[in-house]
Length: 229
Image (tube, rainbow, N blue to C red):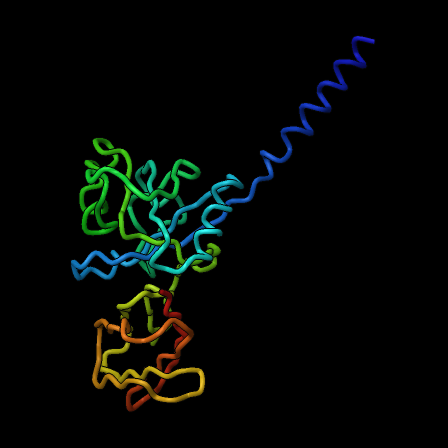
């Protein structure tokens, strides 16, 4: 009888622990604008496994962009295997499930992901211990296949995407290129001649899906972008 009770208890213990071991990690991109001119400050990634936290982020992304709240949480050194912006991997990350969405926070934890936290990571991790970029907003869920491990020749990288205004881009072509902004009806809305590694302000355009056309005398490429408000 005792053996039967023991195995029954063991079976229940294993069953109740199965959901914990099979939790799926999900990754969310947060966009922000720091105003310092560093494109690396435009977005970062946070990860979660807790269903309540995941649902909170998903619900937040259903709101208009300007009504969404920011992230607040514990940070640690290293990219955690997931914290990046375009081809830049950060030297810090939010500890998985040790963060939340907040409406208010003390000023000491506000800052920029690259020009502040990245450049003074020892201070931020060892002294401050947490990060709360006030103007960060959750914009989309990603998969780790979104992480750019390699670059193709001639690749043009656009970030952040979605954007609430400014976008930054860089490319591996040596020659300058022209940039066209088109809507889905293929109507040209804006033309930017002879660009290189720069930025474009799209804050005058309503939320929606657009297409950027990059071209020079040798080739052209297109990139879909989302403007979120």
